[in-house]
Image (tube, rainbow, N blue to C red):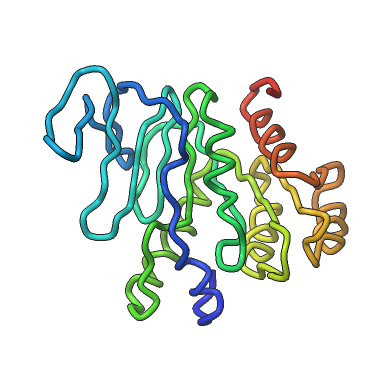
Length: 221
């Protein structure tokens, strides 16, 4: 991410915790806040059967544990164990593909999914921009694997291109996809063929997620 207004704006779209992801209890870990039990909005009472979602009151960020998968949303820090998968790709001008991808990964045992799409982003606050840039940089380098998805539409997603260029040369395991309607798909294909021969560029999000699962030795589903 850069400091340009256009690129800062891509962080302004909120993202909820992926729907339909069953919850279970797990030991607490740094950066993946977990609660035992389930609280109802009306009574605030707790049972001992389900895991509840914790809402951060200052920015609405949601961090949750789902089955054996941990879901961590910016700007919540994560310093726990791996394997860790970072969801890298466009936000502003792009559909909320991160939530869809996280839902596809809900049955990946032991995985932590890092989602840079914040629930709330204050474009008028430079400190928030710096926090977001730092979070993405730190957690991209923390990740054991990175899923890159270039969503369809008119957005070129220059920051995602920059991040791909950085991390393809690091040797970190990657799963890369670009929708056929992404305007710079050919650039991605040619650059990857030069930088990391043999790394395919998938054409659907589902295929890209399936490739990401294989980075950690999982079967395709």
